[in-house]
Amino acid sequence: MTVKRRPDGRWLADCQPIRGQRFRKLFKTKAEALRYEAYINANKAVDPSWNPKSPDRRRLSELVDLWFDLHGHMLKDGKRRKSKLDALCVRLRNPVAALLDPSTYAHDRRIRAESGTTPKTLNNELGYLRAVYNELRGLGQIEYDNPLRLVKPFRIEERELSWLTDDQITFLLDAIRSGCDNPHVEPIVLLCLATGARWTEAETRTPANLKNGSVTFTNTKSSKARTVPISPELEAFLRNHWKRHGPFTGAITSFRRALARSGITLPKGQASHALRHSFASHFIQKGGNILTLQKILGHSSLAMTMRYAHLAPDHLKDAIKFAPIARII
Image (tube, rainbow, N blue to C red):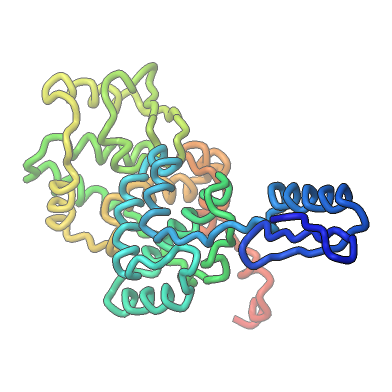
């Protein structure tokens, strides 16, 4: 950059603040040329369009690591999510994150779907990857749009929730009591059936969580503690069990073996969760309030609890009363 006097007496300001951008202008006086040169230099320092950043060439795996360092480590399932994201990076050949091609992702998703991966799992992974971009953009670590923002998740048909009838509950408890190799299975099952707790929530209860005829569940899926009352008989049973056998230990495998012995067949993935569905289903069938059920189950959204509404005794009875064939048959 320089200011030179020309033979005709005028002054030439010749500036090239960044490579590829040159500014030349003639002035009557040297002072005017110097002021112009200073103006060009000042704009170079403050105007992003005059001082563009180099393109972001970080790989997808680098963004995943950064996401985990800044945010993912705080999540309950952060390590599990990161392991799935790391595997996704490998399958996609770790592209430049800013240049991730949605069609490349969709092709990988198709291959996995054809190999037997469930739509729910694939939708979860899409959500995890989107969250990486969205969270890092919110933290100011990237400046470009989420390349997967327009990719649609698979539409999943709502499946019927499996729950146990009174007879099936009896068969299950008989199978547990007659040949179970883990003494903790029965109290955990009873606790799930009595409170609608998830298996892991019930399995991690201790005597300290049982007070005044109620069980308090902490470290829940929604991260909110909830307290559910139980009968005096169940409270006494649990206290006696803990005195004899100590704290609960992992019992899910023994439960599945007992379920198989009972002869009860449940859809894949609904073995222990059928206990929670059974509590909710019986609660509604016997006239329980849907809002109360939401609080007992710890659902953050009423929409989740409404899955059980069709089991209410008077649900949609008007379909019978007002159907056009009501007077014919």
